[in-house]
Length: 406
Image (cartoon, rainbow, N blue to C red):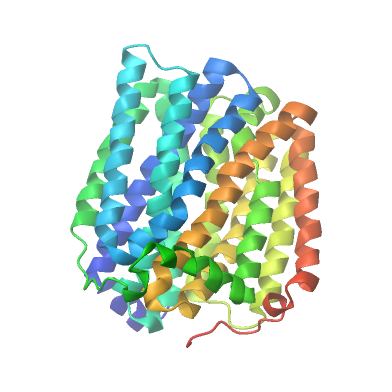
């Protein structure tokens, strides 16, 4: 990134505060996810239970996300984000109490997962729609790439730190999460911007406007659905406790490294994209990245060595970063300002379906076929669909430049 652009971007104080708040919140969330997954597997030793955790997060997110987008367009986005941080801090506190007083069980973890899914329904559209409010439009592609870099730093540090702390004591993990989420809440409340409620989001009939907009803009629809099927079929996050304990023969520390590995690759790629944003053949680059994502998952599924597994997961993260930055930039540049909350909500549904529902799919297929066939078949299916998108979404595949103006 040129020095002048970097100085201007870092000079946006509200953006920097939000960036830090988001980093701390995601760091805590990643630690929480590692601890909850390992805690559940300690209790049940069941791939099916790990899959149900993902389903419990997905269902409330699916039900609430479109109404949440309406709320985000109407109310102060930074305060909505701060509320999400506060609820997650309360969840961490509940898990501390449940563990110390020995009433932590699978049912409680399912319930906590539903709360986290409901929070995600509001957090995702709020944080996606807030960034364009804090920086000039000319800096938006680089701001998105910088935000992605921060997210990846948190995703790297969170699982690794969570695994190390879990090896000491699970309560320690939950306590650190609560402190970090409290700091994220305070920073989010400090974010200032001129909030103008959307005039188009004045009644519940406008809730579906974001979905209509995405349907009518085929490049956005293609980008969102491509990410959905790639992570839905090719993701292996829910099965990492099984790979760590039973196939790679490592402990919570190894699980933390496996959870962090995709983010290492994503961080490196985000830094590259911050310095050298995609300029040409945007559509083909995105489709190629998804195909590489599927291939790397096949390698991970077949690997019997920890270092090979870590390298394969890092490649999945780098490939996914190209897809994420491309999709988010297209979405923000092509969406009218007063609809960003609702369009971001639609994007959140796709992300939630790919992540949480993907975890359920992984758990079900692993219970039926075993973890290795589940991951390998999913990777092959992802590569196949990346090729199919060339024909099914030609407007995306043929996109040459990022749009800089509507």
